[in-house]
Image (cartoon, rainbow, N blue to C red; front, side, top):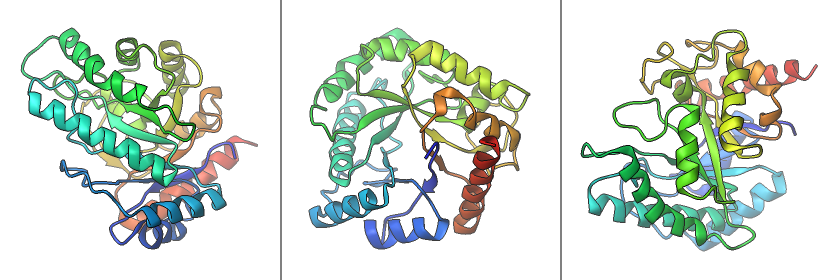
Length: 287
């Protein structure tokens, strides 16, 4: 399939019962999950039998799975405790991702806190994140997918070219990839709404990180205008990006085979409608 389309699904009631049950109601072809509280530092062990069953069922469906790491992770923090907890939290997500058969773990690129220069923060990213990447030695280990921010505060990565220094800090590790959030990149200043804007943005990303590094797309419209630096997702076609740029996205060579996950408001019904809308745009783009 050129682009599986799905959504982030809740798993509080169990990976299979809740996660896959929710996916079925959305007619999702791919899913993203949390394996820990996204706003906490806890690292729950999970249930090996449930992880194995979830992996088995997703493989049988040929459904790509992704894990989103907790939001608190920041390897650019000036606080030592935050960095140490970030290491433990991300290692946990990577290990649970392997157990559940996930292809990748999405992690936010963080910010340079404490008023320190970006170079100092990126050196810290290298010191603590590169060893985690080097631990990914199994054939079924996930990729680590960097997700840029909307450009708030002292963000380390918000525009396409910001991925360059981040990749350099991590030696362009072979297990390193990108998760492109359309709302974030639009809010950061890349105008996706103008004709050709999506194509130019994807071109810039490929120029910066190389071909084959785009592994996942968070397909979200934006409640705010381009360059607003606000992370507020909107339903597909109902925000300041609009529907047409997503049709353009499906035709770009860099997105071939790359899954799309919606993280849009509106609950289950809204997500189902957005998944259906993206499938329509995908099908019309392929004609």
